Structures are given as structure tokens and as C-alpha cells.
Image (cartoon, rainbow, N blue to C red):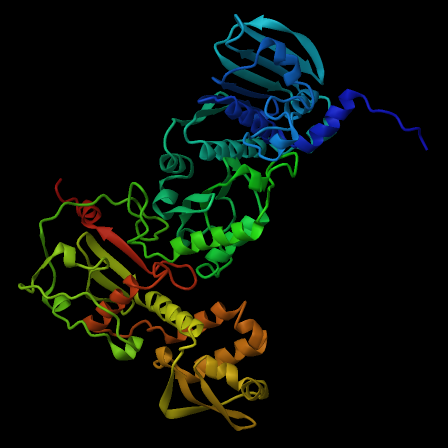
Amino acid sequence: MNAIKLLPDTLINQIAAGEVIERPASALKEILENSIDAGATDITVQIDQGGLKLIRVADNGKGIARSDLPLALARHATSKISTQEDLLKITSLGFRGEALASIGAVSRLLLSSYHASDQHAWHIQAEGGHLVAPEPTARTQGTTLEIRDLFFNLPARRKFLKTEATEFAHCEEVYRRIALSHADIALSLQHNGKTRSHLHSTDVNKRIAAVLGEEFSHTSAFVSESAADIRLQGRVALPAYSRATRDMQYFFVNGRYVRDKLVAHALREAYRDVLHLERHPAFVLYLEINPENVDVNVHPTKTEVRFRDARAIHQFIFHSINKVLATPSRQADTPTSTITPPAAHAVKRAPRIYSQQTNLPLDSVTQPPAFYQTLFGDKPSLPEVQPSNPIAVSAPHIPPLGFALGLLHGIYILAQNEHGLIVVDMHAAHERVVYEKLKTALDQQTLSMQPLLIPESFQADPLDVATVEEHPALLNQLGFEIAVLSPTSLVVRALPTVLQQANAIQLARDVLAEIREFGASQLLTNKRNELLATMACHGAVRANRQLTNMEMNALLREMETTERSDQCNHGRPTWFSFSLVELDKLFMRGK
């Protein structure tokens, strides 16, 4: 065995660089965080060949004094913490004092800076960890850091890097994260001499729109919740804007981008009731918390954190997002604009100015405000619509989803509100209404049962018969009365009241299959919502069923008072709106 000996500093820095600097994007992240910590308000990023040839970051921060330049490239040297107490309440993005030393150990680095305490700017060079004495240079206040030929002295590491396009994509993602976390900082990005992005200092909403696009901005809801010393704000996409991958998920803790399993689980649970098709939500969220209650010193990359009270954070995030998703779209307002219906391709709709009177068809406003019993099973509180002139209705009395005009191909309800046309998928909308009724009734143990006038019997396999014999209490709790007629047949004598129009035999078969697959305990806990979604799908009105105007208006009113009515149980949108401005453009009116 070889004798134990101290490693040389160059080798130590290269080993450390393996943890901190994984690829060009890792180096860019560290430099940008240093610029932000230096108080920069304008940062320019220049990248060549995906960052392998050059990464240059210039900022207008406070700069580094000439006497501190050698220390800036030394390991475990930093201006951000000095005591153990500082480590317990970190407020800066960087604090470990090893990023620049690690970068300098695996590249040709040039650091130029001008500090107010010096008469002019200075620069210092490092090549493979070897420093050159500082020399005078020309520069205004701030710092410029150039990294050339990354991993030139580690060919094995360089060989494992991907293509230029892939490496630049990772750098661009780092740039986006910084841009989203600090909207008050102007940023620009160049690649191979071409400007790829230029962002002005602005507010958070405009920055999100600039980075992620207007589509995300207009199909997302604003979040702003606080409790004790915790605050959560940002935007979460409505379920119709779900993604096939997790590529548009940004979560920041005190301005730092993090990937945390606790946070991911809380968000996944909040969306669980509206995303059932292996889709992923999109969001940009900012969590502000007392620095003493979060530990960011978990990993050298500083993207992992630990919360002192993890359970409280989980519950706070879950309830905050769940509250927003449960709010009907007409109420989920941003500070500057109203959230539009959850159309993945929606564009922001400018309000059109109308007169006080809006014309509606006579039969759409003179229907009695009684609830259609066989469709929903109980009476909601409907707004009173009693105009003196039945043709002219004052705009303030028109409900958000308007009044039904008719049914298109037995599938879509066409309705008119004060802004234009509403198109509703009647099956998807009714499915959500029934689903929420089932959930509420089951939670409150008030799921009523409707005896069938003529019980329906059917042939069943032995497993279904055994399931009925083993779980009579569970079936009753779910609103079913199913009895065994013989070893091969069952009879359905009662259904849940809200599902009385469903196909009793097929509904019974599906519920028994769910019980058999998951068991009673799972169905009332982890798989409860999936079971209720199945039941709701059976109870919802089917395509090609001709509804009267009273039935269609009843459904619209129910949607307006039902949580998460903007999407069905599988995350698909239930309605879209088309303003008169958009319709005018289609027909080129006014041209």
C-alpha cells in the first residue's frame, strides 16, 4: 500500500471541479450567481461553441478590489460568510468560496474588475490553476469573467461532453432560470456572435411572459399566498396546458432555483385530481422563507435544500396550489389581467366596449330558474334573471358563462355572454360537476341512494359475485345496493342519486372491477378519486343527447359554482371562449 500523502493544490482543485463544474452550464450558473450577489443590474452573457470555447459574463456590479483578485480565485475564500452563524442563515446565492477556484483549475480564466476603491480596473489570469499577478486594464465599474477552453487539461472530462447544441441548450436553461428568478435585472445572451435573448428589467409577470411565452402566461393562474413567515407567489398553468415532460417547472426558494422532492410531491398532489394521463404541470413559483428555516448547504451545486419544518412547507404549497386550481377561471385573477379559459392555444382577449344592453334570444332568458332534477338531482341557487324587456338584458346580470343558444352536433353547448361566444363540451363539463358532487357527498358521508323502479339483473363471473358478498358495506357507502341472485348473477337495486341516469349494469361492473383490483382500503384512500372519476364518467350526459335550453342553462350555472370546472377529470378543457373582437377579425368586419 502506498504511503499517505497530501495532494497538491492543483489536483485538489481539479477534484473539486468535478463536483462543482460538471459542464459549461455549471460554470455559467456560478458566474451569474456571483454577478447577482455583487448587486449587478445589467448582465451580458456571451457563449461560443456551446461554452466549450468561450463563456464571457460582464456585469455592472460593485466589482472586486485589486487586493482581493488573487483571493477571488482561491479555494474557500469568500466575502459572503465569515462565521458559523452566517452559514445558518444564508441570504446570498454563492457562499462556498470554491466555484472560481474550480473553474480556474480546468480552464484558461481571465478576471477583470473595477472597484470604486481603485483608480482603475485590474485583471488577473489563471491557467489550469496557475495564477498570474494582477495587471492594469481598461473597464468601467463591474466585473468581466472570461472562461476559455473549458477542460483543456482534462481531456477525459471534455470527451464526455455532448454536442455544441446540447451544451448550449443547458447554458440557455441556466440563463432562463436566472432570468425568471431576478426580473429586476436586465440580461442578454449571445451564442456564436448572434443575440439569442435580450431582456429588460421589468416585473415578474412580464418576465415570465418574456421567458416562457405569452401562451403560458395566458393559460396560467396567479398564486399569492402567505402564512406566518412563508410566502408563495408565481404562476401555475391550468391543467389544459399540461406538458408531456417536466421541462417547464421552475421553483425558487429565496431567489435560488432548487429541485426538491418534497416540493415536487406537494405540487404533484395538488394536480393529482386534474391530471390523470401521465401529464406534467407547468409552473413558476417563488417561495420566500426565513433563511434560518432552510438549509441550502446540502450539495456543492446548491440546487438541493432542506426545510426545518418539511411537513408544514409541503402542506402550505399543496393547499396554496390546490386553492388556485379549485377556483373557477372567472375568479382566478392576476394583478394585471383576468385569467382566460384554459385553452392551450388561447391568446389574450382584449375586452370590447359594449352598450349597457346586450341582446339575447328570448327563450334563453325566459326559462324558469329551476334545476333539472333528472340531470343533477338537486337544486342550486341560481341568479334571478327577470328583465322588464325579455329581449334586452343588462350586462351586469349576465352570468360569466352566459345563456345557452343551442346544441351543436349533440356535443357542444353554444352560449352567449357579454363578451362573445362560449363553447362547452357538455359531457366533459357534466362529468366534472358530477365528480365534484360525488367527492363532496362521500367526504360528508351524505351520498344518497336512489332505488331503481325496476331492478336490473345481469350475468356475473364468480369474482364479481364474491366481491359483492365480501364488501356490502363499501358498496352501500358508495351509494349502491347490489345483491346476489345466484352463483352467476347479480341484481342492482339502487344507485347513487347523482348517477341515477347511468347505465346501471355497466356502472356496477366497473365499480366491482375497481374494488376487486385495489381492495376496499385503497379505494377509500389512494384510489378514491380514480373510482369517483369512473363513476362520474358513467353519470355524465352522453353525446347526441338532445338537451333543452333549461337543461343547458342549468349545466352552465352548475359549472360556475363547481370547483375545477374549467377541466374534466382527465385534465382536458371543458369550455372555450371567443370574443366578438376575434369573431370580427375572422369575418374581417371593420376593414
